[in-house]
Length: 174
Image 1 (cartoon, rainbow, N blue to C red):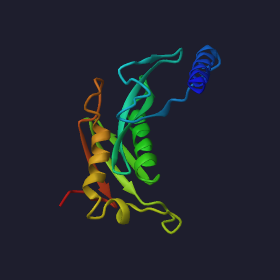
Image 2: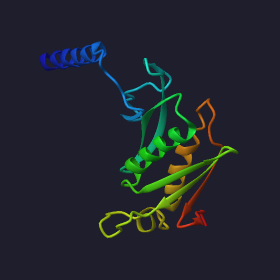
Image 3: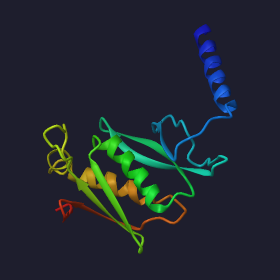
């Protein structure tokens, strides 16, 4: 019981000191972790800062065959391309070992996503072709990228369609 009280006091003190720090500045995006059972950040709460309003974009990832949700904090006044780039960067880091994903937005609210191998494939531990676009993982890879890119729950201006390409060829489930 004593350890629990000390832990609660430490957490409360840390939160209070962080909240009172007037010099606190955040970057344009950051990742906040949560699991499906324990949510660290409520995505329905939007944070206000002197710089602008922050929105929390959910990113679903698979970790050890278990779905998890992480939230990417993005400035609301960021361009659509900047928002998409933040999501793509997070997907790459969290799901695909940092492999290159390049998204391009078009005027008709569609996006193309190019999956690119790292320049030095020998130094990389993972590749799109061998690890994520093979017959076992292809469907899961497509679902992770497309679902996270579409952000169906987002109320603002957003993309409506996504096409995935690998080495200039459209990726399909067939």
